Image (cartoon, rainbow, N blue to C red; front, side, top):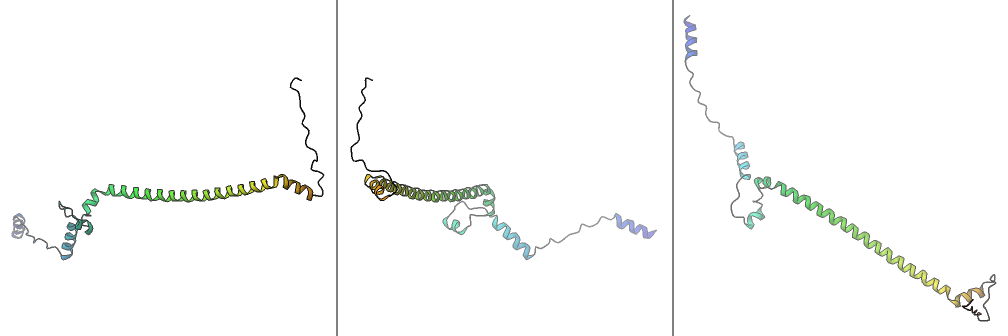
Length: 152
Protein backbone atom coordinates (compact mmCIF):
# COMPACT_ATOMS: atom_id res chain seq x y z
CA UNK A 1 0.00 0.00 0.00
CA UNK A 2 2.88 2.16 0.36
CA UNK A 3 3.11 2.33 -3.44
CA UNK A 4 -0.48 3.58 -3.57
CA UNK A 5 0.28 6.24 -1.00
CA UNK A 6 3.14 7.45 -3.12
CA UNK A 7 0.81 7.75 -6.12
CA UNK A 8 -1.75 9.59 -4.01
CA UNK A 9 0.82 11.96 -2.69
CA UNK A 10 2.10 12.69 -6.13
CA UNK A 11 -1.45 13.31 -7.22
CA UNK A 12 -2.13 15.52 -4.27
CA UNK A 13 0.95 17.57 -4.68
CA UNK A 14 0.17 20.70 -6.56
CA UNK A 15 1.76 20.67 -9.90
CA UNK A 16 4.29 23.35 -10.45
CA UNK A 17 3.20 25.76 -13.13
CA UNK A 18 4.96 25.03 -16.32
CA UNK A 19 7.02 27.95 -17.40
CA UNK A 20 7.02 28.01 -21.16
CA UNK A 21 9.50 30.06 -22.92
CA UNK A 22 7.87 32.60 -25.24
CA UNK A 23 8.12 31.47 -28.82
CA UNK A 24 10.54 33.43 -30.81
CA UNK A 25 8.99 34.48 -34.14
CA UNK A 26 10.68 33.20 -37.21
CA UNK A 27 12.20 35.65 -39.68
CA UNK A 28 9.41 34.87 -42.16
CA UNK A 29 6.72 35.73 -39.58
CA UNK A 30 8.54 38.94 -38.72
CA UNK A 31 8.74 39.94 -42.39
CA UNK A 32 5.02 39.24 -42.94
CA UNK A 33 4.06 41.18 -39.78
CA UNK A 34 6.26 44.10 -40.83
CA UNK A 35 4.80 44.17 -44.33
CA UNK A 36 1.24 43.98 -43.02
CA UNK A 37 1.78 46.86 -40.60
CA UNK A 38 3.65 48.85 -43.22
CA UNK A 39 0.48 49.10 -45.32
CA UNK A 40 -1.55 50.14 -42.29
CA UNK A 41 0.67 53.07 -41.35
CA UNK A 42 -1.45 56.13 -40.60
CA UNK A 43 -1.27 59.06 -42.96
CA UNK A 44 0.69 62.03 -41.83
CA UNK A 45 -1.11 65.33 -41.56
CA UNK A 46 0.67 66.88 -44.53
CA UNK A 47 0.08 65.53 -47.99
CA UNK A 48 2.90 66.54 -50.28
CA UNK A 49 3.32 66.26 -54.01
CA UNK A 50 6.11 63.77 -53.45
CA UNK A 51 3.77 61.50 -51.44
CA UNK A 52 1.08 61.76 -54.10
CA UNK A 53 3.45 60.99 -56.97
CA UNK A 54 5.15 58.26 -54.95
CA UNK A 55 1.81 56.62 -54.21
CA UNK A 56 2.25 56.77 -50.44
CA UNK A 57 -1.26 58.15 -49.95
CA UNK A 58 -2.83 55.01 -51.47
CA UNK A 59 -2.64 52.85 -48.38
CA UNK A 60 -4.98 49.96 -47.74
CA UNK A 61 -6.87 51.95 -45.10
CA UNK A 62 -7.58 54.83 -47.50
CA UNK A 63 -8.67 52.47 -50.24
CA UNK A 64 -11.01 50.62 -47.87
CA UNK A 65 -12.61 53.86 -46.71
CA UNK A 66 -13.01 55.23 -50.23
CA UNK A 67 -13.96 52.04 -52.13
CA UNK A 68 -17.49 53.33 -52.77
CA UNK A 69 -16.19 56.55 -54.29
CA UNK A 70 -13.65 54.66 -56.38
CA UNK A 71 -16.35 52.31 -57.74
CA UNK A 72 -18.62 55.30 -58.46
CA UNK A 73 -15.84 57.09 -60.35
CA UNK A 74 -15.06 53.96 -62.38
CA UNK A 75 -18.76 53.49 -63.20
CA UNK A 76 -19.17 57.14 -64.24
CA UNK A 77 -16.04 56.89 -66.40
CA UNK A 78 -17.46 53.86 -68.19
CA UNK A 79 -20.74 55.71 -68.78
CA UNK A 80 -18.83 58.74 -70.09
CA UNK A 81 -16.78 56.65 -72.51
CA UNK A 82 -19.79 54.70 -73.78
CA UNK A 83 -21.82 57.91 -74.18
CA UNK A 84 -19.00 59.53 -76.13
CA UNK A 85 -18.70 56.47 -78.35
CA UNK A 86 -22.44 56.43 -79.09
CA UNK A 87 -22.39 60.18 -79.82
CA UNK A 88 -19.51 59.69 -82.25
CA UNK A 89 -21.43 56.92 -83.99
CA UNK A 90 -24.48 59.19 -84.25
CA UNK A 91 -22.34 62.03 -85.64
CA UNK A 92 -20.89 59.70 -88.29
CA UNK A 93 -24.38 58.57 -89.28
CA UNK A 94 -25.58 62.20 -89.46
CA UNK A 95 -22.65 63.13 -91.72
CA UNK A 96 -23.37 60.13 -93.95
CA UNK A 97 -27.05 61.07 -94.21
CA UNK A 98 -26.15 64.70 -94.99
CA UNK A 99 -23.95 63.53 -97.86
CA UNK A 100 -26.76 61.31 -99.18
CA UNK A 101 -29.18 64.24 -98.93
CA UNK A 102 -26.79 66.50 -100.82
CA UNK A 103 -26.35 63.87 -103.55
CA UNK A 104 -30.14 63.41 -103.82
CA UNK A 105 -30.65 67.19 -104.11
CA UNK A 106 -28.04 67.44 -106.88
CA UNK A 107 -29.62 64.51 -108.71
CA UNK A 108 -33.11 66.06 -108.39
CA UNK A 109 -31.75 69.39 -109.67
CA UNK A 110 -30.12 67.68 -112.65
CA UNK A 111 -33.32 65.76 -113.50
CA UNK A 112 -35.39 68.94 -113.15
CA UNK A 113 -32.98 70.76 -115.44
CA UNK A 114 -33.21 68.00 -118.06
CA UNK A 115 -37.01 68.04 -117.87
CA UNK A 116 -37.12 71.83 -118.28
CA UNK A 117 -34.83 71.56 -121.28
CA UNK A 118 -36.99 68.89 -122.90
CA UNK A 119 -40.22 70.87 -122.29
CA UNK A 120 -39.05 74.03 -124.07
CA UNK A 121 -41.05 74.90 -127.15
CA UNK A 122 -38.05 74.75 -129.46
CA UNK A 123 -37.16 71.22 -128.29
CA UNK A 124 -40.78 70.07 -128.57
CA UNK A 125 -40.95 71.37 -132.15
CA UNK A 126 -37.68 69.68 -132.99
CA UNK A 127 -38.96 66.35 -131.63
CA UNK A 128 -42.21 66.71 -133.63
CA UNK A 129 -40.30 67.34 -136.88
CA UNK A 130 -37.90 64.47 -136.30
CA UNK A 131 -40.63 62.03 -135.31
CA UNK A 132 -42.12 60.53 -138.52
CA UNK A 133 -44.98 58.83 -136.73
CA UNK A 134 -46.32 62.05 -135.22
CA UNK A 135 -49.48 63.56 -136.74
CA UNK A 136 -49.23 66.73 -134.72
CA UNK A 137 -48.38 69.92 -136.53
CA UNK A 138 -47.56 73.42 -135.53
CA UNK A 139 -50.59 75.74 -135.93
CA UNK A 140 -50.25 78.45 -138.58
CA UNK A 141 -52.99 80.66 -137.17
CA UNK A 142 -53.16 82.19 -133.76
CA UNK A 143 -55.71 80.77 -131.36
CA UNK A 144 -59.28 82.17 -131.38
CA UNK A 145 -60.43 84.10 -128.35
CA UNK A 146 -64.01 83.33 -127.43
CA UNK A 147 -65.77 85.99 -125.46
CA UNK A 148 -68.66 84.96 -123.31
CA UNK A 149 -70.98 87.72 -122.17
CA UNK A 150 -71.52 87.86 -118.44
CA UNK A 151 -75.28 88.46 -118.70
CA UNK A 152 -76.16 85.09 -120.00
